Length: 165
Image 1 (cartoon, rainbow, N blue to C red):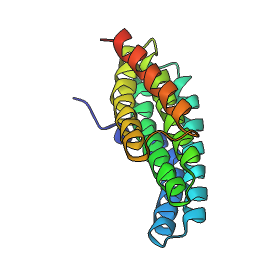
Image 2: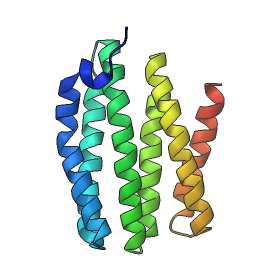
Image 3: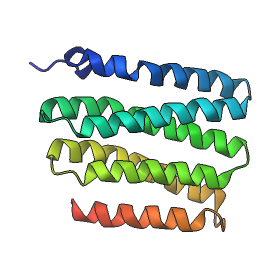
Image 4: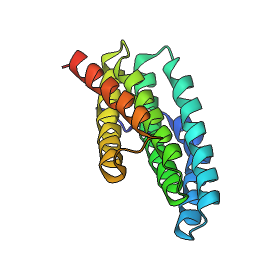
């Protein structure tokens, strides 16, 4: 019988607690239209999730690694999407595009992992980040600052997507 990852790995939940605090503070600031503070809190949350993902990728036990990444990957995606929204509110489309392409690239790294379970996590989340990139491109159109970033990320997704299907 399989237990939930948080039950199996309470240290993952503990490691993500600061992320949750920063996301909540960012959400509060965002709702209060304090865009700079929201951006700063989301940036901290994103950086934390990035560092945790890098650490979790080095875990030797495949089951533990997968469970940890299954918790950390959505945290990274949420932080990145919130950060991109804050950048958009600040009128910084380039910052938003950079954040969205960066998180997409991180999910593609998981998608290309040698462990099929990690690949599956990457596939799920890279498809989500790809959809967000497409939505961003549709909303903001051909912007000279963002066009190259978006085109590169979308091309990378297509190549990776074809490789694993």
